[in-house]
Length: 118
Image (tube, rainbow, N blue to C red):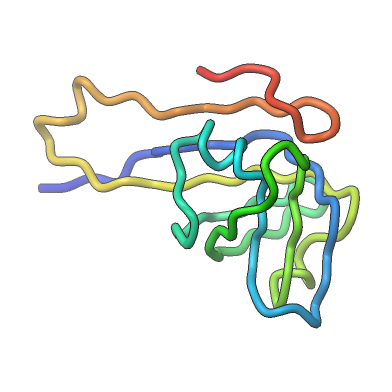
């Protein structure tokens, strides 16, 4: 049997751009994507701390060091500039993998800089 567990979490991102008229979805600074152990085009779930809205989308790689957290397309209805977000991904694990597994948690400070990686 497989179970769903948290794989990665970016906690406390601040939206830097929100555009409905743009093809794409969630663009994050490449350094943030790597810190969380994520990949471009990977499915993620986004939880808006400001409004309580939740949505699923995929990642687009942004410029390294830019602090980018850009929400594009239909997702832009769910997050505006200045909103605070949590971005997570999940993984399927076999029973035998659970005991040794631990997710990667990245806490974000101002300007979308990494405060801590757990």
